[in-house]
Image 1: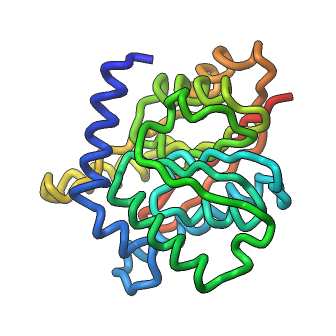
Image 2: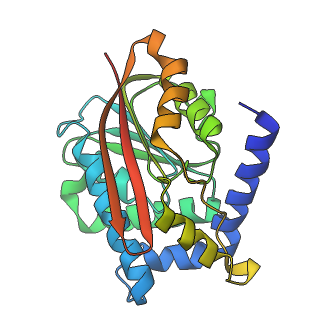
Image 3: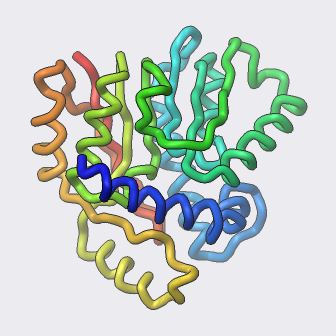
Length: 241
C-alpha cells in the first residue's frame, strides 16, 4: 500500500465526515424526515446493512467482530444483539460519539439488546491498525468506497491477516450511470461535496485481492449489489477455507 497516499486520502475522508457532513449523517441515520434523494440513500444503506448482517452467523456468542467504519453504530448494535463482542471504529470522533450516545440510550430502552452477552467498544481511529488485534469476522460497509482499487485490495489483505472467518466489504461498482452521478456531484459547491467515490471494476479488484490472499487460504464468496436511487454499492464476501 502506498502509505502516504492512503494517509492523505484518509485525512480527506475524516475531515468530511467529522466536520463537513456530521450533522447530515446524524439526520440520515435517524428516523427524521429527509428529502427524496436522501431517502433513497437511507433505503439503500438499510438494505446493504441487512445484506451484510445476513452473511454473518445468527448466533455470534463468543465471536469478535470488527465494524470498520461504523458510522453511527447501527450494524454494530445488530451484531451485539446476536452476542458478538464488537469493536466499532470510525475515522470521525463526532460520529463515534453519536454512536456511543445512541447505544447508551438503546441499552436503557431495550433490555433484549444485551440478552446474549454481546458488547460494543466504540473507538475513533484507523480501521487498519494492527493494534486492534484479531477478529472472527470483519465488516467494512461503505468504508472503502473512496479508495482506488489497489488500496482496497491492500486493505482487504491487511484485514485478512488478522481475521479467522470472513471479511465482508463493499465497493462502488463501475458503471456508466454511476459515472454520470459522479459528474453531477461535481456541480455542488465544493464545501458540500463528499470525497469522490472510486468506481471499481470487479474483475480487476478480484485479481488484486486474489493475488494477495489466495495462498493464505482465502476465497471469494457471495456478492450482492444494492441500488436505490443515488445509492449504489456492491457487497463482497471473502472467506477463509
